[in-house]
Amino acid sequence: MNRSIQDIFKDSLKMLDEDKFEECIGGFTTLIDLHPIVIASYVQRGRAHWEMRRWDKAYEDFNKAFTFDPDSADAKWTMGLMELQLGNFKRGWKLYEERWNSPSFKSPRLKTRLPDWEPCKGYKSVLVWCEQGIGDQILYGSLLFALKTYTEKVTVMIDIRLIGLFQRNYPDINFIRHDSKVQNSEYDSQIAIGSIGRHFINKVSDIEEVGDVKYILPDQNRIEQVKQELDIQPGEFVVGLSWASTAPRIDKHKSIELKNLLGLWDIPNIKIVNLQYGKPDYDIEPFESETGKIIHQTTVSNFFDLEGVAAIMSLCDAVVSVSNANVHIAGALGRPTYVLDANKLWYWNHKIGRNSLFYPSVRLYPRDNMNAPWDKQVNKLIEELRAYALSRHSR
Image 1 (cartoon, helix red, strand yellow):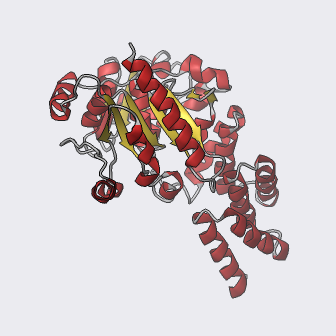
Image 2 (cartoon, rainbow, N blue to C red):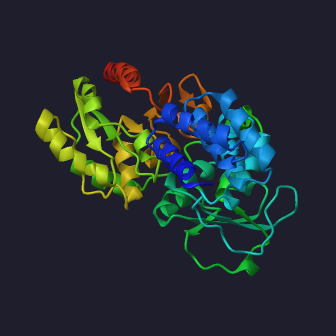
Image 3 (cartoon, one colour):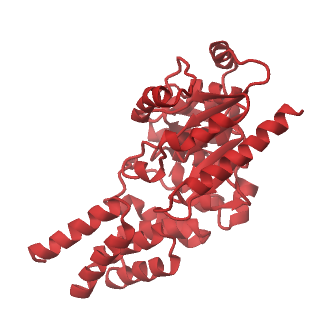
């Protein structure tokens, strides 16, 4: 591959990462015309078509990549995510397992010689180990109850910030911190938390039948502490708000600027409480100075103290957020949640009407594609949130 072709590939990949999907498709097409056996070009062009929800074209590119390299883990993993999004679960889960062989997948794999857990194999004890981020651990945590019905002893290695929230609801499951040193001799099987789904979800209807709801529980003492801080007055409609994702590489795809949510403050008696974590939290001061609108704060660290975050959400009439960890916490708590969905993550594609099948209390407002503006979704969300606020006031 000469230098000019390398430059085309780098430029096209940069445009893909910048959400310039139409432009990058042209670059990858040029590469394919010049070198039709360059697998990476098909995979990346397929990604771009996928982001624009052109399923057929994405299929064509991924299948072409498989033709030249049937063992391409990157192509298989990416294709698996799309299959899961489209509800083709049997094939999707199988391809999703290729994530461990893909250089693009950064979550570490547990080093163990224990066999993979499977139902009906007679395993007495299983070590579940966490992967990916907080949101993924909560999402797949909805299947822990189903796992427990097959296995006498279940131990779950999970992010330390989630241990209490899960342990209160599942006293018969042992939750330990994700970096604990464990003895393999204590277990006869193991499974990654993101791999549990392949044993229980083979069709869309399985999500409701097998997945748990309201499966994390807040600390009542923390709720009382936060309640004093917020000083909620009778008649106030309390909304927890977060507007940004901090996930590496895909954060900009899923985030929205605070000023685009200004219409929320027009809802009568609304009291907006900050749930944002990470650097976007610094948006608050300039926003308040520019608009005169207030986002109420607590002493809770929204990144480190998820017990505090859960306590705040328990006091909210609703949560409004882009797709980030807060949505998973609110959904697992069963709180009414309104989500601006960037159409980036496979699990949000499975819903009844606007409501998620994984979290029935979560209402979704999906963007048309990755380049579409948020205006239509924001207006609809505010309209429906206003109606909900009025219905609560009239009770």
